[in-house]
Figure 1 (cartoon, one colour):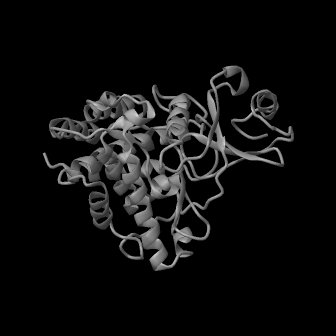
Figure 2: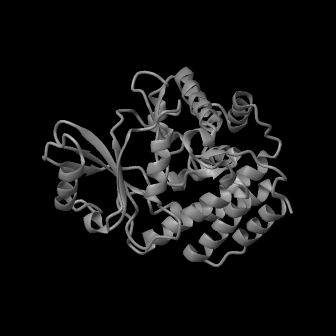
Amino acid sequence: MIPGLDLDALHAYLSANLPRYAGRLEARRIAGGKSNLTYWLSDGEQQWVLRRPPLGPLTPSAHDMAREFRVVERLAPTPVPVAPALLLCEDPAVLGVPFAITGFVDGRVIRSAADAAALSPAEQRDCAFELIHRLAELHAVDPASVGLDPTRADGYLARQVRRWSGQWERVRTRDDEAPLELARRLQAQLPARSDRAIVHGDYRLDNVLLAHDRCALLAIVDWEMSTLGDPLADLGLSLVYWDPMTEPVLGVPHIRAGETGFPDADAMAQRYAARSGRAIERLGFYVALGCFKLAVIAEGIHQRYLAGDTVGDGFSTIGEAVPVLLAAGLEQLPA
C-alpha cells in the first residue's frame, strides 16, 4: 500500500497510454517534497516520475498539475533543463486527482548540510553559482517564443500579495497580526515596474537535479507554482531559502552559506544581477514577498499536518517557521 497511489488503476492507465510500457509496475514515494507528492515508477525496463497533489483538502489554484506539466512541456526545446513531459491525466477515475508523469532524470539532490559536506568547497561554490546561472537562463526565455502570452505577467506582484493574503485566511491555525501587516506593507511598496518572465515559483537548491560527478544542473523540477511574472520574485524566494531560518520548512539541517564554500546571499544576488543584467536595488521587497509566500505555504502544510493529511516525515517543525518568516519579511520592509 502506497499512500496516494492506486497501483491497479495506474497500471491500467499506463498500459493504455504509455508507449512501450512493459506491464510490471513498481513504485515508491520520493521523499523530500512537502507539497505535491512525488513517486518513482518503473516497469523493470524504463523509469518515470509521477507527481500528484497532496492528500486532504486543497487550496484554490494550488497544486495545478496541468500548469506544471504544460510549462515543462513548453520549455523542452529551450536551453532550460527539464525532465521529458510524457503524460498528463485529468481523469479522476484513475487516482482521484490529476497527475503528471515525466521521464526519470538520474541526478543527485543537495538538500541538507550532510549532502553538502560530501562536496569540496570549490564544488559547493560551483553548485551554488550553477543554480543562479540556470535561474538567469530560465528568465531569459521569451515567453512568446514558447507559446505563452507575456501580458499575463502584468500585475503579477499585486496579484501575489492578494493571493497569499487570501491563502493565509484559508489555512491559518493561529491569530496573528503579522501577516496582515506584512501584506499591507507589500501592497504599499509595490515596485513601479516589473519585468516579464517565466517564473518557477519555488526555485531552490533541492528543486534541481545535479550530475553525480560534477556541478552541472540536469533538470529543474517541481514546477507546480510556475507562472508568468516578475523574475526577481524567484530570486527573492531563493534567497529566503538560502537563509537558515527555513530549516524547519526543509526539515533537515540547513546548509550554512557563507561559512562553507557556498556563497552568501549577497554574492548570489550579485551573481544573478551580473548574469541577467537586471537591477536589484529593490531586492528587499522581493525577499519580503518570498518570506510572506513561504510563511503562508508553511502554515498550509502545518494545517495539513495537524489534520493528519501529510505523508512521510519532516512535517512536525514546519509551523515553527511561520512567525520567524513573517518577522523577517517585516524587517525587509520598514513601515
